[in-house]
Length: 318
Image (cartoon, rainbow, N blue to C red):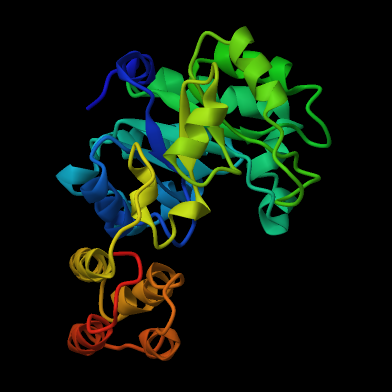
């Protein structure tokens, strides 16, 4: 169990790389493979409904248990009811996680329409109440992931200062507004300014590809968070640019699959892994036909057969 000063303590050690919360991707198997590549990565889970954690008889038991290698683990949740967040936080803390992150950034229409995610940037009283209720109820730190703002960056500093005053211990900023969605270039300018105004650590998320790219842009920020560029490339978390060999990629593919086998039920493990298989091999010429087979693979034995055939290809990265 971490202390409420977890983020401040981590910030004093080194510049930390974080795995961004990604729905459908950052499950236990994915987090384990990332930590196998770089044990210093701080992993965030997929986002889960606070209401679901509280009301479902099975959700918490299915998604919150995690392997030792995943620690320290941060669980992200979304919702709009401070009381539900409070109850969910109490449940989550019992699973030995290092902290809880609140999703105040997701722009998905179904999420925003329900007053979850980035809608909390305008429903600020609820946003602050959520943090206060959670912080009073658990010993682990509460953090927030948000955006530059609703339509522009003008309220970013003020909003973040209020989050800090409500006892948020860390803020991650996605470098686009809600209006931008995922289009256009991310804007770093106001994140640097925000860090000058806050006493708590600030993480930047978006528009970087690897550690070297982050270090060029980090400046006064505390940490960085890698998102989609890690798909099929967990080596992006290395503190240097690294190009794995084909043999290394095939080995990690199988190891990732074994992690998934241990954490998923029935055939769900293979359904989840298919999207990863394609990502792992997207840069290799001559594997197009194998990629077609990988999206239809149904067993570990079939995967081993395909990997064996791919392994005979010439590794152009060697």
